[in-house]
Length: 109
Image 1: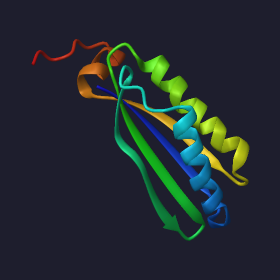
Image 2 (image 1 turned 180 degrees about the vertical axis):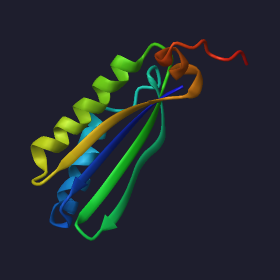
Image 3 (image 1 turned 90 degrees about the vertical axis):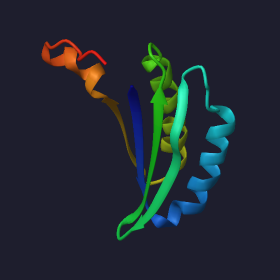
Image 4 (image 1 turned 90 degrees about the horizontal axis):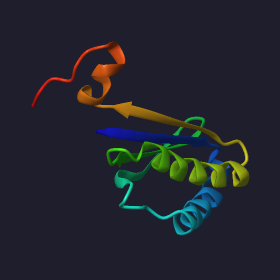
């Protein structure tokens, strides 16, 4: 299993704008079940220095590039509309998927 984890940080003064852009981004770039499924569509917490959002998407085998493109397009909408935005996108591989990275065969299930 491969997971795409996107995170955003922005000032609290941009919260209303962020909510509007989120809804617009989901209309323009909706979830595509052919690529995988959202595990956590969006979770938000208020912090001392602003607002932190996180989303987690489980990617179907062989669809990492396409799923990354979808995530990047959504993040780009945010970056163009939200002043003070910081963002990240990380790819996580489960144990079976990651074993070849260190030269080992994946354990048989």
